[in-house]
Length: 294
Image (cartoon, rainbow, N blue to C red; front, side, top):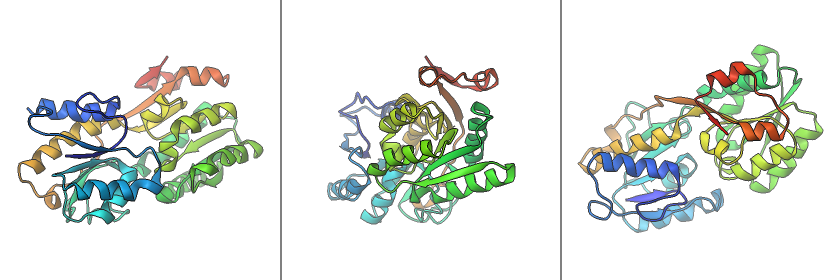
């Protein structure tokens, strides 16, 4: 079995999402080292290395590959035969990974985060945090251009001003934050596709240094130091991916396994991050939080 992720060595990974996947396999009766072994390739090096990592796994002829969203396009180019379980694709139909959610029609199946659906909600949460902000900066990547369009439409409908800042590589992150600060943006909406997600810790540090309240897509970005996230419960998604792996191992055709959508969304708040920029989280937001990091 191949995994494209980081922080995993043997049966006791440091990564909470991979730990969730292995826990899901254990719940189904699989024992690490007895029923399966893993080949791991980490994606922390950045998108420029994704194609090489994908090719390495394909050459090993693993039985199934489990991968997060940023790695999926590279895997699509690398193999049309090895089953790939998407542990959270941004929008698999729009990305050309599957023909449809109901009938994937190829070697890809798994889970769609349907990230665009939550963009307007994240924007509303950010405005609750900084109701007096006249301008919201939006960091986005080409892989999530549809999310930017959703944010733009939501802001237009509500009469809010956005500053669009596209990031094309990790070297543009610091200038992007500087541009947001120089424009006197009152908040930051981060639409992550690959670069911004992999650079979550650095991005969070820069946002705090700039004293910009920022809302992200997924919990790991808050655990890396970000202020707040709203999106699919990614740990639960990886745990549920074990069920798809089990079906494929037992002979199911991924082309006929419908792509599933999130069943759990979570709002996560990092109080120390809020304190570091002198931001008081409104009680109405705190009460709705699924988890508050102390």
